[in-house]
Length: 91
Image 1: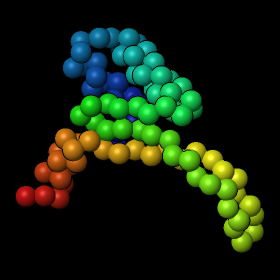
Image 2: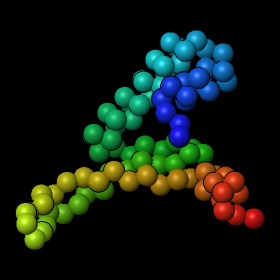
Image 3: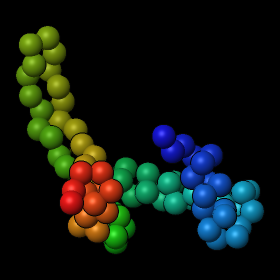
């Protein structure tokens, strides 16, 4: 599993930035994504994928009423799909 700490170390080695600077970069990117998603904006990271918010209508369930809300959806890019397919399941 990759967590924030291992992601920071990997990015730090790749960029040559200190761990503190790398952490600040990662935190600012995550915060910007969170802010954009909370405003209902679409985020496209070319070569990685797209985050989008889809509206879900209110509905009645067996035990409770579920109000209308937004659902965060991630759609991987073709590049990411091919990479995963080639490494894990494809030929």
